[in-house]
Length: 157
Image (cartoon, rainbow, N blue to C red; front, top):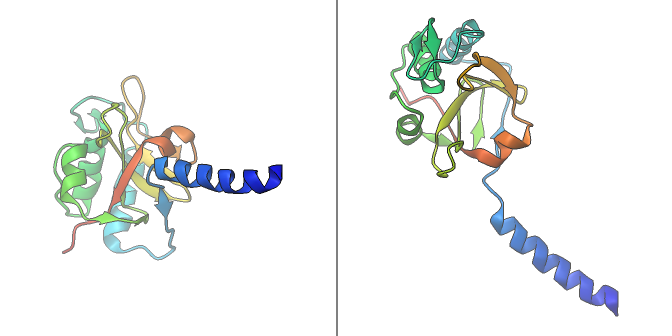
């Protein structure tokens, strides 16, 4: 009798919890990259080790959206300056591919406040914040999974 009651209750609990889950971060790695994506990733990799600087867009210092702007410019693609504007301007995708942008709500507002470039293999390149440098980070960390708000792709030509 107890088992008969637990089954429906467990199902109800699972449905309720699923409704509370945030949008999942899905990726689709590929070995064949377009020239644009290869240029974006090459510039992002060359930026590794550059110190974080709020509002920074040069080799003297980068913030997260400055890194994106710099890497995309290498491929001849103009993007807005801030992570929130980038999120609004670029086409949203369900699965991120290498070179796509990943957006996170790190400021507690639920709105995009941080952006990284998907590298592939479950990693992103980003400028994490004051006192740190542009680095590669695993997307498997709960911190990123819990704050993920969406992914965006390169704009259509």
